[in-house]
Length: 189
Image (tube, rainbow, N blue to C red; front, side, top):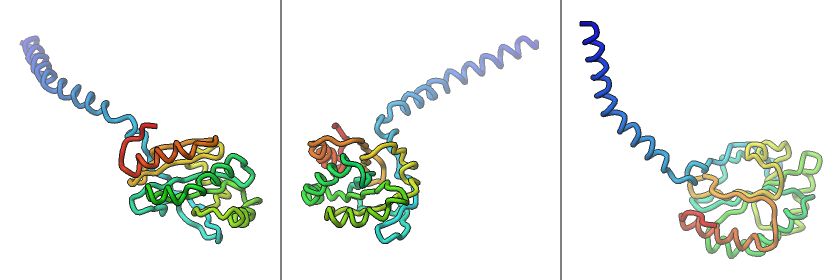
């Protein structure tokens, strides 16, 4: 009698598993086919940095009305950074017209050199929003270990592209990516 009860329980559980197992497998397979890029997208972390007036600004307030934001980490002592930002400044008006992008630059100059950033920017006449991360809080939160380092943020505030270093002509490749992000397309470059 006891053996029969075990067989009944075993077969009823087996029948249950036959019904549930295919649904479970289907759910797992469907979830695994989520676009790979979607899983990699993350929001910009909230950190405190300073504007050129010395006022504390939280990075969670970065906004561009649903248009892309390009965040660039740089330093006054970094030659490739200066070349990159100069190249971007030369085409910034064109980029804004075509994509609506806002460029935000974040100086990683430490507290000892932070006073150099404003005069440096004024001398270059760059037309970007400029912030100073003198305690490297934002730099660490974004996992930046070298500069220049750039992040492209989409309309939803998610990081969709990143790039470090600079070589002449990189701005042309970036413009293609900017146009794709502004149009809400998948990045192909």
